[in-house]
Image 1 (cartoon, rainbow, N blue to C red):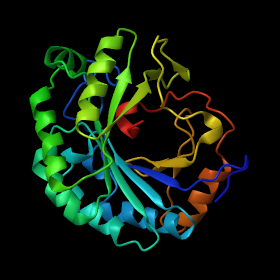
Image 2 (image 1 turned 60 degrees about the vertical axis):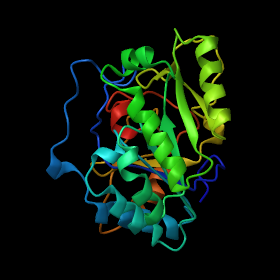
Image 3 (image 1 turned 180 degrees about the horizontal axis):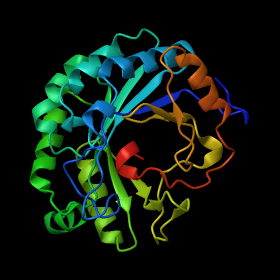
Length: 268
């Protein structure tokens, strides 16, 4: 489907949970966050219903995000449900990789096509500093498990911050090239004022607004037309199609600002 500004909207990002097993400095406060109650979170069946309705309207790409999607029990079952939707051509997942060694084989068998793995530094000490609690060796183990499971075209997401150095970027780029993976640099940005944090190194994400092709489903059942907007449309499961149409219709020409949710709730 095309929005009011002529953009082809075919990409649905689904946040399966607002929970995460890391505490990245650019994503959430050190004190943690106010988590949604389990009763507020959509069931996998309802997420799949939204995806199926979107697919009938021309959406063909789905990405699972969080929080950290692998911390929610049974996420492999959701992948299988999405794979069973005939018009869905691509299912991807963005993960921090901490639990990937446990799930890579099952995800591949369930029909997941591609992985983006978040690694902001290949230096163990700096990785720990950025994530506050992370162990880089577990992520590297997850990457090896993904390779062994047969995943290809894997991307490594690196958030480029004010203190990120050229040497760090080169080291991670070399790590990716040695494994036939692609490094994707992402601007550290503030949702609240739609501003990237000034950095000296170029980044590839987020996309410019005139190339936006997506809407987002939050874990608690709201559609977001735009990452940089407070607008959230509650999904009416009696008429999912109308809700998706509204989300597409209400996409702004460019981002505004978002104060209602944070990065950890929608996976960027």
